[in-house]
Length: 162
Image (cartoon, rainbow, N blue to C red; front, side, top):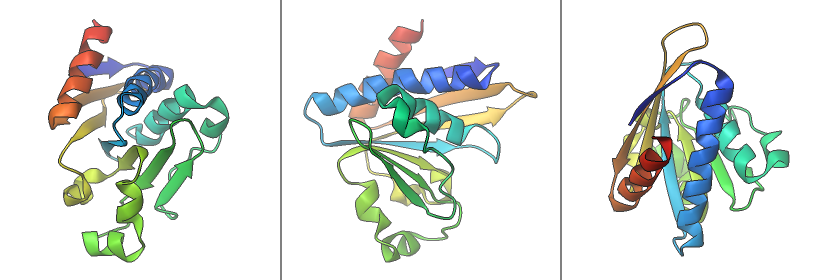
């Protein structure tokens, strides 16, 4: 799936639609769902997370910022969202050393920026979102499913976007 967003609000709105669908997976009895975000600095990863969290809890969205130094930031939305940034980590051992691996694979929805830095941190079933800058405010987004739940979610998302 590939889309182009001409304003940050479009990125956030798309992320909100994805959040509602991902929350539906949890409501159907699944304990968690993992989304990995890939893109250069300024590509819109944190804006994507803000739109995602806002769809679930507008008050929690006020707290969204890039957790580059904190590494992991939980948001008290319903369902709960964990937002992580792997930019400063160099190995899964770093992730395990701070206890973040358990958090990333815990219950709720997990969004991880810079998953391409540590792809082995992703579970077997996850959704990959790639964001790229192609103009002053223009962002190109592509989505790729890894696993059966992610494939179903992406198919549902595609059917709603057309």
